[in-house]
Image 1 (cartoon, rainbow, N blue to C red):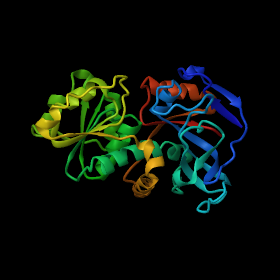
Image 2 (image 1 turned 30 degrees about the vertical axis):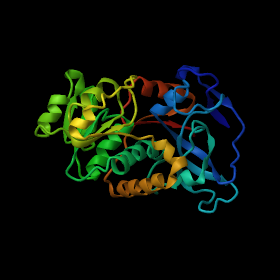
Image 3 (image 1 turned 90 degrees about the vertical axis):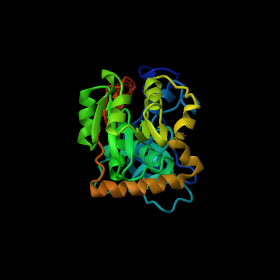
Image 4 (image 1 turned 60 degrees about the vertical axis):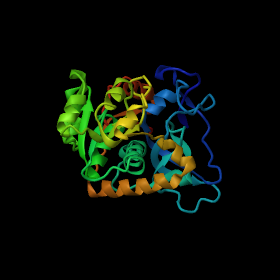
Length: 325
């Protein structure tokens, strides 16, 4: 089969496309004929050796896939060969075939295309677990979403609306804000024009946002500390800005707010039921039309490096997907 290989730590241009042996499913795993693989910011870090987990070289990047089951490992009873599924595979997704734990494999809605399913689990799963499980977002609260046109940010906008929140979206350009608006954001702020602190306070009657969803970090996180409501929650999703901020923790005493981390991938090992329950709820919302995943661009397998580079340089909106067949 064909697969993208990372043979050395580096930028996307160091990746190569080669023929490799098919992976065989171990006990408790399924083998999947991949139709599409979602591209995530974590993929741009893992190929550089900058992610929380560092796989042995060489390896194939790509953590979420959609396709059909082609073989079952020993002990797998809840799937059949030919089932349409989305799966989390940690690594190995940018290939024509991969294996994934059965407990991290989920049946797809019949109406969901493979390209949508491949970009669904991580973005929507991260945002849903963050907002419901970690931040306990309540109907009527105000949710501030940074990077609101990106993969996880746009998902957070839609999920926030589905949960009954008022959503304030920030982004670095009007074009990106237009995408957030089309997916339900109530208020829009272009933070390239001079920050967002005062406008958030104005929109909330001086109180600030109840929940702040931050995949950007850096200066955006620093300013968020100044526009959060009493007992608010700041969700630390990632650091797309490139700078990991340091919080003056004395500020948490002033408004009793919480800084809440969300490493969604860890649930696959520590508590997979959280992910499975979340995925079931998200599929229910999808079938009802409450969420409308947006795939902005698809790339062929031999062009996967460009997909990663476009994401890395923040040229994309919504989800970016690599099609493998």
